[in-house]
Image 1 (cartoon, rainbow, N blue to C red):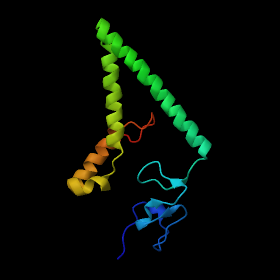
Image 2: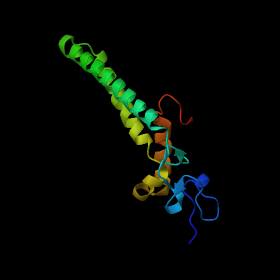
Image 3: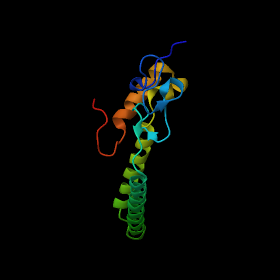
Image 4: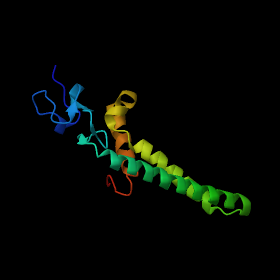
Amino acid sequence: VVSKCLVPPACDGWNRCVDLHSGHMCYACQAGAWRAQAMDSCSTCPPREVQWSSFVLTWGISFVACFILGAMSMDAALWGHMHAVIMRMLVNHAAVMVFLGSFVDWELEPLLGKDGADSVAALMTVLSFGGGVPRATL
């Protein structure tokens, strides 16, 4: 049985996986490798120091953002200002769009069929937030 490789750069054309790839249809990454998005090629993991500093920095920024949003919410509750409510709605919207935009068409296909999966994946790619870098344009 011949199957199409899910991530074309991961296969060498002879049913063998290229470096850093392994598993069924070369979709898995080997130990010490990762992929940023579902259809990207595997890359070598950054050094542990970079991983920990990214982790601490992300949690630190998240903590500060939550503290600021909490203070704004208290201000809105006490004084009736709506800017905090609008900020919370925008943050929630961004979080939902990041989650929905992470799906790719082949993950949705069993549920929605081929055409439905393609349509929903294209829509979510356009609407998703990729950290300030546009992922797709109409």
